[in-house]
Length: 308
Image (cartoon, rainbow, N blue to C red; front, side, top):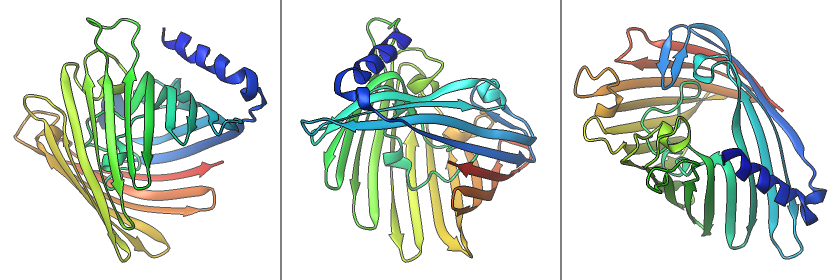
């Protein structure tokens, strides 16, 4: 069912007016060196040098005569850490149609979590820790709409073996001003899945993130409050301050809450994160320090990447 939905959608898009679609090839390659082993959801990232990101993809769009646009993306990712099992992974692959009325996306694509945590997504390599509403739809369908400063969306995962007809769902809303933004992102997980929404949320639970950011002068402060819906160890708060430092940008962030106590050894967990990020043309590089009180050693990371 999963593959059939995507293949059928691609065939529909490539037929008729969309047959003239021209695809752009793009990619992202990044190598990193880390000093400490990090245990992550689904695996382990070992200390040492690793090609922590290798992404290649094709994307394109075509305007239709009635003001609508069809578009597609086919993206593959390879990660030599245990979290990806050293294999190529279907990262973002979808087809869509959109217009003044909004956009419908069919396939594997990000959810609306960035609308809540855009101000606190500071973990360049390790990934965010306080967000629980799932960061992608697996074999799903979603609608994105809105006008001006308001955006909203709703989506669902289509599973080939639903439990009692249940479906994993996600929803989000965002308000944006000249120098501020607030948003919320929620998700309900009813079906077991190794990927997608249920990879971040236990089936039978509902998660919600609320957050935003405010920019004043050269500084930006972001706050996100997350609740994973569990009966215990459910909440986390992330706060980050971003500011220019020399030719690059610096980030200082703190995450705290009982949901971060992965070892279940106490009432709360804490994570301190420092980042220094630079970019020059297609290249980007930086340093990151992630100190989690559940781990014996702080993790220092140096990375260099190229986008094309």
